[in-house]
Length: 77
Image (tube, rainbow, N blue to C red; front, side):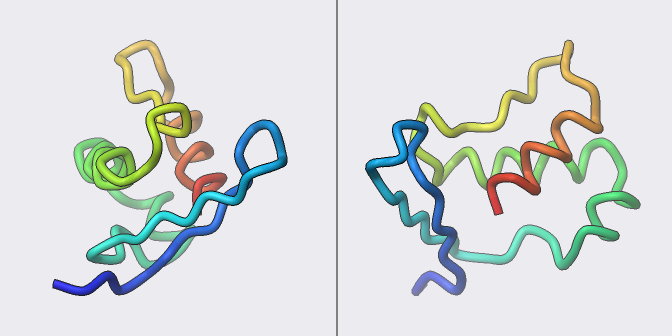
């Protein structure tokens, strides 16, 4: 299945551009992230983490608040 969306991020050093291709769009908009249940928000993060380089993955540990996870998702996209 061809990728349907690509994300462009700068590496933390600022010297490298990282392009991440996704097979599907994990959510539609900011409002979608605000209203989705906890399990769906974690699934979005897992979908992104499956494709992001290790050092750019979203921390979804139990100690993280939903607001922090949501913010990391928005920064990633």
